[in-house]
Length: 253
Ligand code: NAP
Image 1 (cartoon, rainbow, N blue to C red):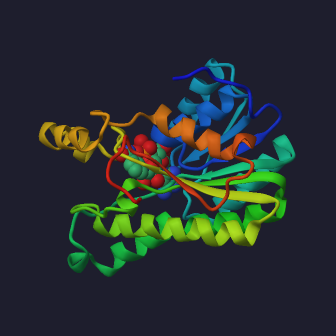
Image 2 (image 1 turned 45 degrees about the horizontal axis):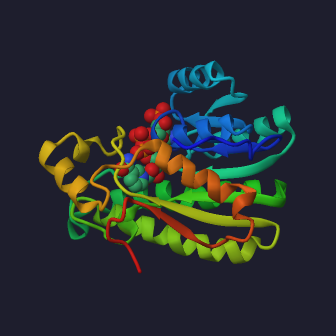
């Protein structure tokens, strides 16, 4: 990790799906840079453990249970953030599901619905509620994936939902300008619980490492650094963009 600045002093950041993995890494980074961070996930135990870890690093943190599909929990996430910290400067939409490794033509309707719901729709619904509270200089970051550009076997329909986030980023950047910037991070492969079905397989892991020009998988800190840049004033003239953080894996020109 490079030297950490204090770009988020006095700011309040909500990161969804943030009790482990990339979401936790982003919350930790924003917190270390001075933000008060609101973390959440489906399970109270995970929330409590993550809050403890952040507090142990001197980070101001509030933890809430929020399954992104639960309308009441989404409402409470915003309400309780405002009650405790009085404002919202940064929202990072990080939740996703990849419930199948089937091909698109074999994917059941219920699974298609779930992919749309968790990976896209709930971020839109959360933003509809957060938007009225976002002031000038605020920022939204989506978490897409390298699979948005290369929806490979086993990640095909999931990849397509991540492609949709690239469009959502553009559309909302226009809709929320000029007060709120909207950007996106497209991570390469990071050995988290989510990706363990790939990264714990020695053969697959090696081939993923070889596909990266830097001969390694990504880390949660790599993703956090990119998200923090986009959310910060360092990116004050950047909106509607997706930053690919994949060690040079094939994406777009
Ligand atoms: P992870 O380590 O498995 O962490 C997932 C987090 O999300 C956990 O804190 C989990 O906690 C929470 N969560 C899961 N479902 C949720 C839901 N419905 N509502 C609220 N919270 C939920 O996953 P990750 O790899 O960091 O993935 C995070 C994001 O990065 C996803 O958008 C994923 O698509 C993207 N991504 C990951 C990779 C990779 O290689 N890892 C690559 C590209 C993109 P609970 O179990 O307590 O809910």
